[in-house]
Image (tube, rainbow, N blue to C red; front, side, top):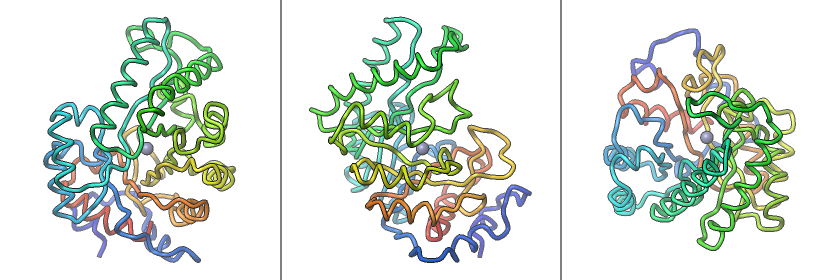
Amino acid sequence: MDPASSAGLPQGDHRAPSGSSAAARAPGVRAASPALLSINTATVRAQWTMPQIVDALQRHGIRGIAPWRDQVARDGLMDTARRIRDAQLDVTCYCRGGMFTATDPAGLRAARDDNRRAVDEALALGARCLVLVVGGLPKDSRGAPASKDLAGARGMVRDGIGALLDYARPAGMPLAIEPLHPMFAAERACVNTLAQANDLCDELAPGDGPALGVVVDVYHVWWDPCLEREIARAGAAQRLLDYHICDWLVPTTDMLNDRGMMGDGVIELPRIRGWMEAAGYRGAHEVEIFSERWWKVPGDDVLATCKARHAAA
Ligand code: ZN
């Protein structure tokens, strides 16, 4: 049975009819271990509070969680940390730090201070790493681009990560750079390929893999012709810190909030997971789906569908 049908999800053109079954037939890749499934809390952010998410993960037998900062703040850091500890959930990452670019020194200082707080929160939650979405072009007070200097923005990102590393490394919190699809270069992240993230790691933390690494989010990097090579490169340097899964719908109607459920789109998930495993990655498979469609589906149906689709992803 197709779990999406039972969830009452509208059957539209966005669904690839053979998606999950085609993925299940991929040669040479074993089924994904259910024990590695983790849920990024953005996936059910419209349905549930943090306490409800923690309860739901226990109910569904899902062992991993990746909380977002704003959701944690709403329900309280210490309360959330206690609930997660009591439920014995594995915090596969904390989302997120970053946004290192700014127009002036005061903005850069504010970003530095906020990132240090993010490290402290990640430690309180027992997260495996702090995800960094690094920021795009600097913005003015109204949120509009204040500069076209992309190279300059990338320089600020390098300096910002370097400075945060000096704080996070002694504290024992690994930093994980998440390259974002180039369509986000202006607004969210000017690190856009895994090669670029690997280069930053090599420059800022040579030979210190786990302290500074990368997140491989399939939504952002699936199209990259160098993906297999760069995953192998990150793995060889002990830099594969997290793996985010979802799918790329055709057509994608909103670049931020129209991510697909695994199996509904065109990403060869078993192949990419195979590259991760070949590179030595043994960590979580974290479902991160920003989707106006899925935010309308009851949370229990979303989690049941995540479990079913993960097996073939
Ligand atoms: Zn992600």
